[in-house]
Amino acid sequence: MKIKNLLLGLALSTGIAQADIYNIDTKGAHAFVQFKIQHLGYSWLYGRFDSFSGTFNYDEKNPSASSIEMTVDTSSVNSNHAMRDKHLRSDDFLNVDKFPQASFKSSAFSETENGNGTMLGDLTLNGVTKNIELDVQLIGAGKDPWGGYRRGYEAKGEIKLSDFKIKKSLGPKSETLFLTISVEGIKQK
Image (cartoon, rainbow, N blue to C red):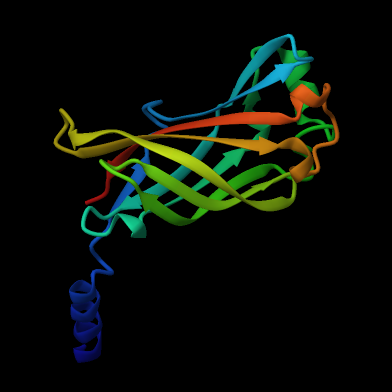
Protein backbone atom coordinates (compact mmCIF):
# COMPACT_ATOMS: atom_id res chain seq x y z
CA MET A 1 0.00 0.00 0.00
CA LYS A 2 2.87 2.40 0.81
CA ILE A 3 4.45 1.77 -2.61
CA LYS A 4 1.16 2.44 -4.37
CA ASN A 5 0.71 5.74 -2.47
CA LEU A 6 4.32 6.69 -3.19
CA LEU A 7 3.85 6.06 -6.94
CA LEU A 8 0.60 8.05 -6.96
CA GLY A 9 2.27 10.94 -5.14
CA LEU A 10 5.21 10.83 -7.56
CA ALA A 11 2.88 10.83 -10.57
CA LEU A 12 0.96 13.80 -9.21
CA SER A 13 4.08 15.77 -8.33
CA THR A 14 5.76 15.18 -11.70
CA GLY A 15 2.73 16.16 -13.74
CA ILE A 16 2.00 12.72 -15.17
CA ALA A 17 -1.59 12.85 -13.93
CA GLN A 18 -2.13 16.51 -14.95
CA ALA A 19 -3.46 16.04 -18.48
CA ASP A 20 -7.22 16.08 -18.94
CA ILE A 21 -8.58 13.16 -20.95
CA TYR A 22 -11.40 13.75 -23.44
CA ASN A 23 -13.56 11.20 -25.25
CA ILE A 24 -14.37 12.28 -28.79
CA ASP A 25 -18.13 12.91 -28.96
CA THR A 26 -19.25 10.68 -31.81
CA LYS A 27 -22.51 9.72 -30.08
CA GLY A 28 -23.70 13.33 -30.22
CA ALA A 29 -22.33 13.68 -33.78
CA HIS A 30 -19.97 16.48 -32.73
CA ALA A 31 -16.99 15.05 -34.57
CA PHE A 32 -16.19 14.45 -38.24
CA VAL A 33 -13.51 12.83 -40.39
CA GLN A 34 -13.84 14.34 -43.86
CA PHE A 35 -11.80 14.45 -47.03
CA LYS A 36 -11.70 16.02 -50.45
CA ILE A 37 -9.80 15.07 -53.57
CA GLN A 38 -9.86 16.35 -57.12
CA HIS A 39 -11.86 14.38 -59.65
CA LEU A 40 -9.95 14.32 -62.94
CA GLY A 41 -8.75 17.84 -62.15
CA TYR A 42 -12.22 19.24 -62.96
CA SER A 43 -14.00 19.30 -59.60
CA TRP A 44 -13.76 18.31 -55.93
CA LEU A 45 -15.06 15.02 -54.64
CA TYR A 46 -16.02 15.25 -50.95
CA GLY A 47 -16.50 12.40 -48.53
CA ARG A 48 -16.42 11.35 -44.92
CA PHE A 49 -16.12 8.34 -42.64
CA ASP A 50 -19.26 7.75 -40.62
CA SER A 51 -17.80 5.43 -37.95
CA PHE A 52 -14.76 6.27 -35.83
CA SER A 53 -13.73 6.69 -32.20
CA GLY A 54 -10.94 8.11 -30.14
CA THR A 55 -9.62 10.07 -27.19
CA PHE A 56 -7.28 12.98 -26.72
CA ASN A 57 -5.62 14.67 -23.79
CA TYR A 58 -4.60 18.23 -23.14
CA ASP A 59 -2.62 19.72 -20.29
CA GLU A 60 -2.86 23.52 -20.12
CA LYS A 61 0.40 23.64 -18.12
CA ASN A 62 2.25 21.43 -20.61
CA PRO A 63 0.62 21.63 -24.08
CA SER A 64 3.50 19.74 -25.71
CA ALA A 65 2.34 16.63 -23.81
CA SER A 66 -1.02 16.71 -25.66
CA SER A 67 -1.90 13.65 -27.70
CA ILE A 68 -4.67 11.97 -29.66
CA GLU A 69 -5.52 8.45 -30.77
CA MET A 70 -8.26 7.67 -33.28
CA THR A 71 -9.51 4.58 -35.08
CA VAL A 72 -11.62 4.79 -38.25
CA ASP A 73 -13.82 2.06 -39.71
CA THR A 74 -12.77 2.33 -43.37
CA SER A 75 -15.90 0.51 -44.59
CA SER A 76 -17.91 3.51 -43.34
CA VAL A 77 -16.61 5.68 -46.19
CA ASN A 78 -19.43 7.83 -47.53
CA SER A 79 -19.14 9.99 -50.66
CA ASN A 80 -22.91 10.21 -51.11
CA HIS A 81 -22.83 7.78 -54.05
CA ALA A 82 -23.33 4.04 -53.37
CA MET A 83 -21.48 2.71 -56.44
CA ARG A 84 -18.49 5.01 -55.88
CA ASP A 85 -18.39 4.02 -52.19
CA LYS A 86 -18.34 0.35 -53.21
CA HIS A 87 -15.35 1.12 -55.46
CA LEU A 88 -13.64 3.11 -52.68
CA ARG A 89 -13.95 0.05 -50.41
CA SER A 90 -12.27 -2.20 -53.02
CA ASP A 91 -8.57 -3.02 -53.19
CA ASP A 92 -8.14 -0.18 -55.73
CA PHE A 93 -8.48 2.25 -52.81
CA LEU A 94 -9.14 1.39 -49.14
CA ASN A 95 -9.03 -2.41 -49.39
CA VAL A 96 -11.45 -2.72 -46.45
CA ASP A 97 -11.66 -6.53 -46.60
CA LYS A 98 -7.96 -6.76 -45.77
CA PHE A 99 -7.59 -3.52 -43.75
CA PRO A 100 -10.92 -2.71 -42.05
CA GLN A 101 -9.46 0.06 -39.91
CA ALA A 102 -7.30 3.13 -40.27
CA SER A 103 -5.71 4.75 -37.24
CA PHE A 104 -3.85 7.84 -36.15
CA LYS A 105 -1.63 8.07 -33.08
CA SER A 106 0.12 11.33 -32.36
CA SER A 107 3.79 11.47 -31.48
CA ALA A 108 4.32 15.21 -30.82
CA PHE A 109 2.40 18.45 -30.47
CA SER A 110 3.97 21.87 -30.84
CA GLU A 111 1.66 24.65 -29.69
CA THR A 112 2.10 28.02 -31.35
CA GLU A 113 -0.45 30.09 -29.44
CA ASN A 114 -3.94 29.90 -27.98
CA GLY A 115 -4.15 26.11 -28.31
CA ASN A 116 -3.25 26.12 -32.02
CA GLY A 117 -0.23 24.25 -33.31
CA THR A 118 1.20 21.33 -35.23
CA MET A 119 0.49 17.68 -34.46
CA LEU A 120 2.80 14.95 -35.75
CA GLY A 121 1.79 11.32 -35.71
CA ASP A 122 1.54 7.98 -37.41
CA LEU A 123 -1.32 7.38 -39.81
CA THR A 124 -1.95 3.74 -40.64
CA LEU A 125 -4.02 3.27 -43.79
CA ASN A 126 -4.22 0.34 -46.21
CA GLY A 127 -1.65 -1.56 -44.14
CA VAL A 128 0.94 1.24 -44.41
CA THR A 129 2.08 3.47 -41.54
CA LYS A 130 3.51 6.91 -42.33
CA ASN A 131 4.27 9.95 -40.21
CA ILE A 132 2.06 12.90 -41.17
CA GLU A 133 1.70 16.49 -40.00
CA LEU A 134 -1.61 18.14 -39.10
CA ASP A 135 -2.25 21.85 -38.60
CA VAL A 136 -4.38 22.12 -35.46
CA GLN A 137 -6.74 24.94 -34.56
CA LEU A 138 -8.43 25.23 -31.17
CA ILE A 139 -12.10 26.01 -31.80
CA GLY A 140 -13.01 26.50 -28.14
CA ALA A 141 -13.26 25.04 -24.67
CA GLY A 142 -15.56 25.46 -21.70
CA LYS A 143 -18.46 24.20 -19.64
CA ASP A 144 -21.42 22.63 -21.41
CA PRO A 145 -25.11 22.94 -20.39
CA TRP A 146 -25.07 19.45 -18.82
CA GLY A 147 -22.42 20.12 -16.20
CA GLY A 148 -19.48 18.79 -18.19
CA TYR A 149 -16.49 20.38 -19.88
CA ARG A 150 -15.72 20.22 -23.60
CA ARG A 151 -12.82 21.10 -25.87
CA GLY A 152 -12.94 21.26 -29.67
CA TYR A 153 -10.30 21.24 -32.40
CA GLU A 154 -10.03 21.12 -36.16
CA ALA A 155 -6.99 19.54 -37.79
CA LYS A 156 -6.07 19.65 -41.47
CA GLY A 157 -3.48 17.75 -43.44
CA GLU A 158 -2.60 16.25 -46.80
CA ILE A 159 -1.66 12.73 -47.79
CA LYS A 160 -0.36 11.29 -51.04
CA LEU A 161 -2.33 8.21 -52.15
CA SER A 162 0.80 6.47 -53.44
CA ASP A 163 2.43 6.75 -49.98
CA PHE A 164 -0.28 4.40 -48.70
CA LYS A 165 -0.14 1.98 -51.65
CA ILE A 166 -3.51 3.08 -52.96
CA LYS A 167 -3.49 1.75 -56.50
CA LYS A 168 -6.07 3.89 -58.20
CA SER A 169 -5.61 7.51 -59.13
CA LEU A 170 -7.55 9.62 -61.56
CA GLY A 171 -4.58 11.58 -62.80
CA PRO A 172 -1.79 13.67 -61.23
CA LYS A 173 -4.20 16.21 -59.72
CA SER A 174 -5.98 13.36 -57.94
CA GLU A 175 -2.88 12.13 -56.10
CA THR A 176 -3.29 14.37 -53.02
CA LEU A 177 -6.11 13.86 -50.54
CA PHE A 178 -6.97 16.75 -48.22
CA LEU A 179 -8.07 15.60 -44.78
CA THR A 180 -10.11 17.55 -42.20
CA ILE A 181 -10.71 16.15 -38.73
CA SER A 182 -13.08 18.03 -36.43
CA VAL A 183 -13.36 16.77 -32.87
CA GLU A 184 -15.28 17.85 -29.82
CA GLY A 185 -14.17 16.04 -26.72
CA ILE A 186 -15.99 15.53 -23.44
CA LYS A 187 -13.67 15.74 -20.44
CA GLN A 188 -13.63 12.58 -18.35
CA LYS A 189 -14.11 12.92 -14.62
